[in-house]
Image (cartoon, rainbow, N blue to C red; front, side, top):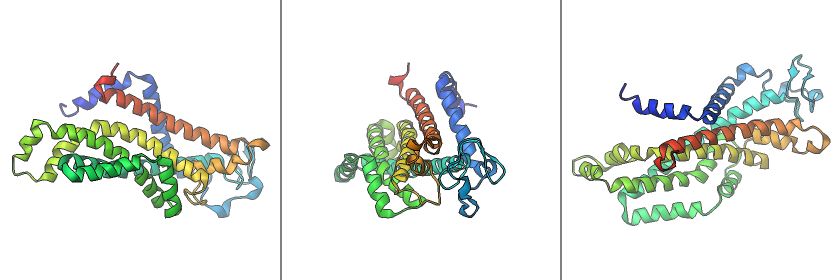
Length: 292
């Protein structure tokens, strides 16, 4: 029970913020919809052979040739928008979480290692990180996505390269503070390998600020993926991400077919806002200076 006490205290404080609690419920609901998309969606938007062009650009509530109601309408290819949004959320959550985890691992390791070894290695690593932070993340992701090409792995690699520096800078600051504490000196005086001291003693104590950055960067990764897909350098056309769905309907906004872009955009906004609300609450609880 003692091992669970910190989590229970954290959860008790988290529940006091009703807005953050609702946002967390929204994230869980979206994650479940994304995972269960093949079971919930009435249509597989990846199966281009079953798309019927006569169902294209139909308004919400239209009964298509498949015999089911298109509750959110259809896009220019005849995709059921509800199905496409579910699969688009699946792609967005997968890419955002995967990019966040990989960027977390690379950036935290780089930043903590730089603070631990010090000297010229620290200066070299952190100057490289600072140089990358001087460029907008969207610019780096756009260039890398254009160079690497389209695909999920390429997209994740581009997002990781554009975001790991934020984790590195945060980990470096936290690890530099931990490096000067007595318990690190005591651990170094024992015959423990340096990597053990770094990964088992220093890095775990750097997790609170890194977790806060992770929540923000996952939301940013989802937004970046949508932006790149909207610009046509993200995922291939056979994988309708939310950004691509918005782009597909952009040209029809002035003709009254608003649903093709608006509904995917609303889904994207709800997901990003919910993640940011949860991230703000986590930040407030893990940073004593920000506690109300």
